[in-house]
Figure 1: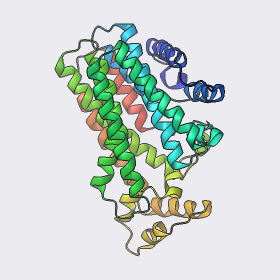
Figure 2 (figure 1 turned 180 degrees about the horizontal axis):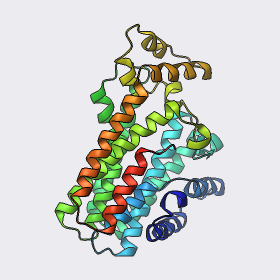
Figure 3 (figure 1 turned 90 degrees about the vertical axis):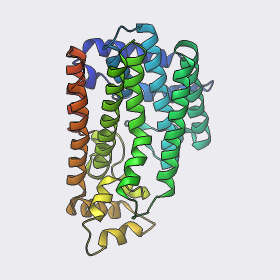
Length: 322
């Protein structure tokens, strides 16, 4: 977290408050699970979503305590979805540390994730309001729907571009959008500012997820903190694959993707073929288009330091390596 936000001292201090609030929540009675959640919170995550809540609030006149609670609730929600993702994906590492499901098994991890959901909604209901609780409940439903769609279409080489984009809109972009919109609205920003931030958040989230998918194909596990090629190993069809399949005249990539069992050697070969067919390059271009859209929305916000920071952060996310 510090490495990403350290050039913005006020936001970095606010995020430390968010982290302290998260760690003060009664997540679970089991000490081992509490320690695992603490490790996840304190690992090298960027804390983008709570950072966006705090940043958006700077466009208005925030109640600092209220905004910190909102930011904490949104980050807790995000962590809960990560825990459940790791169960589904059978992941061993998250941010360079063992996942809860790897340490305690999927049943305990499910319960830990559920406890985090409860903590999220408790913070919202007690300190923010019922309307935001409803928004987050709808968001959780959308995230789950996107994850169900992703799971049902594993190894389906015919996943369309439209279906992929709809999936990541629910899986990732919606939470980015809500973070910026809720931070602005809870700080009394004019509707025009809040809506523009919501649109920017959607585009940032779309670009961010596409870059995640690019890094899964070509990233270094030491840098990213999670095993490379995980999606390829599990048959999850992401944008680099969708785009590479459009340039697969001999059908070799499609045939390789159709095989159910994959070794690390096979995954490396798949990544090579995706790259050779232009999938990675074209996916980066697509991420750039979403970044450009986000920057256009941001440029129409009131001139201020928060606007400049948001534009800079958006640009940095496109060029990230982890």
